[in-house]
Amino acid sequence: MKSMTGFGKETFLNDTYQIDVEIKSVNQRFLDIQLRMPKEVNPYEMAIRQLMKETLQRGRIEAYINIKQTGSGNKEVQVHWELIHQLLSEIKQEMAANYPQSEFNPEQNINQLLNNSDYVEVTEKQEADETFGDLILDSVRKAVERIDASRLQEGQKIQQVLTGYSQEFIDLVHELAGFVEIYEKDYREKFEAKINDWLGEQVDEARLLTELAILLEKGDIHEELDRLAIHVDKLQELLYQSEPVGRELDFLMQEMNREVNTIGSKSSPIEIKNIVVQMKTILEKIREQIQNVE
Image 1 (cartoon, rainbow, N blue to C red):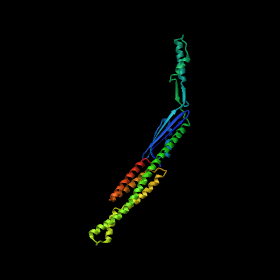
Image 2: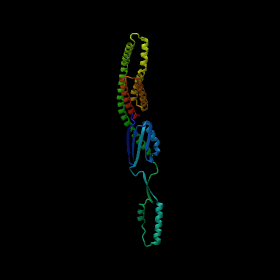
Image 3: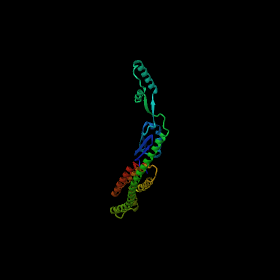
Image 4: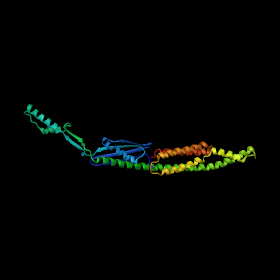
């Protein structure tokens, strides 16, 4: 059993890149992957989503991918020599024509031009690093492994809580079943005693038993108890399955709650009503917990 709540982080660092991947998840009815990443990672979006889908099957997944350049290996200098040659040539001609006595120093002018971005640019290399995609996907894969481990750890805690609630519910089912047997026997004895008080010894035994059976059938909850026992067995089975069971648990809670409500509507003894209230309380606690189960 896994929770839908978790967190995973991976950082990769070499001489060229620092890649930070953070993934967090919360409960959601279906799988909803939200990616926050720089445009350089866009070509790998489908592969990243596929990596996550292979492991994370439900929940709202928010992934943050940040890329930081750690060196100059992916930069290059572009010197616009044509512009520089043209400029220096025109300056030289102008100086010779109008200022023949002045000394023209090309080296000094070039030093000044090097600080001008119109003539010298530092840009990112246009060719893609062949290892970049592999580094991104490997970082994402490790972050997914960490969030998966986090969700599994949280799921084990939920499993322990649900196991405790399940046992409490089983105890109440047994208590209710035992009380029903005593109640039906006691109800029959009281019913016969009242009929004898009203009619004396002139009682049609067959008719009496028929009427009693009709009354008891209206409040008969044995069928509901049998179905609850089956549902509880299924609940305990689901708690220890490794694949996602959140949706199935949610449906099972609806069925169990329906049986408990039927028992409550059929039964009049206050003892049964009290047990029904306790059962519904436990089912609500279970339902709250499974909202976060994958």
